[in-house]
Image (tube, rainbow, N blue to C red; front, side, top):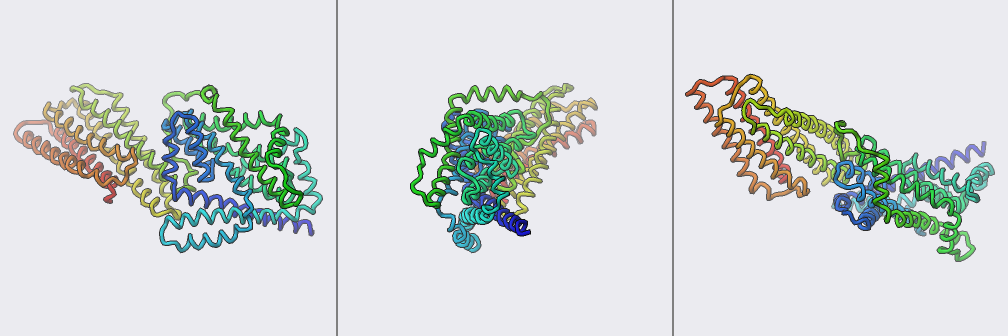
Length: 561
């Protein structure tokens, strides 16, 4: 009975410590993202074909946000959209593997007893700071305090197990004294990390067990080897439903870690002794031995990823070709899927709105493609029809509906939690932009349907009316193209946009009214088919509605509403 009570108390304290540790990692990441999230995403998107630069960016960003999972999910989204090549993505992913090892170095510091005071002091900053930026710095520091406090709770919780023979026998079976033992311990690290989807949490558990002497250094190092494979499950989940390029990036992440572990396993005892030689013991006291082992453990994790990256970098192009061969392109005609959004970004609002912004840019690009297709349709002489261009507009209108629906659901869920004020403002602007672009797509589809009605009813518009429609279409197209640039360059709000936009928008309205007035006067003097006249005026009205929605978009871009 006493043993059962002991196990129950250990379980409660260890689970509580792990929960606080995970929450601390979340606060650290969210605090840093709130302060620097947009800049970090732009930093990743600026990666070039220089593989060294890509690795450096991946390392730096992951070191700051302390989550290789977030970095790899972003990279998968960029590759899925064609915004980043597979070669660039692999370089960033290699760097993310190095960046995430900073957790081990932080946890190896001799400051764990200061976790609770740091948590208390930073919570005051978080609660009472006047400026939002200071509040999120407080959240970041509060997360660090929670990480160390949670680690202390886990360590204290594991201590009673040192006197339990059954527990000691269990951990003895994990000892990495043989090659089989190394594989067994690595497999445990793989499974635990795959389940909780956090290599940092697994590392925290290992350090807690190491502090209580339930694990020795060779076994802890073997578990760390396995967690490198377990952490790849996050990128693979993010790639599910994506295109072939996204799945290649995720597979590249998996192969990078699996191959690295496989080549290291046969020489792992020599690798471990090499690490022990780099960090020798400086005394026989328990505290000194523990500190030495914690430093060694952090070095095992970092050195593995650094060496693995150095091995892979010269063969990056052949490796990318191998991944592309393993995952061939899908057949044409597959259903359109959103390119950037992933449910994991709901937990990271600062980065989430950056990703949804890319979907808004994609909506603008689809609208511009519709503009081009409609220009082709309006240029054809009666009674010719370009069914390919018509189908293109109908297809893109469905895509716009899909993006608008998914972006609305995503942002509604993201903004329902407590988020920074800046993120809230950006999210609200994006919700309105998604609605406006979807409405523009609807009116372009209506224009195509009206043109089809003319042809099907054998109604030929006079040359003057057709010229008017093309002129009006050109003016509207100019408005939409002018709006695309600040969206694409992310210069929002852009107060200077209205200087040129407002006169152009006013011109569209003036020209449309002139064309309608001229047509009605002609209709009154001459005998015209009433249906043809109705369709023509409906087309003029549709262009006016497009102009209205474009003006609404301009207001959002300039920050007026």
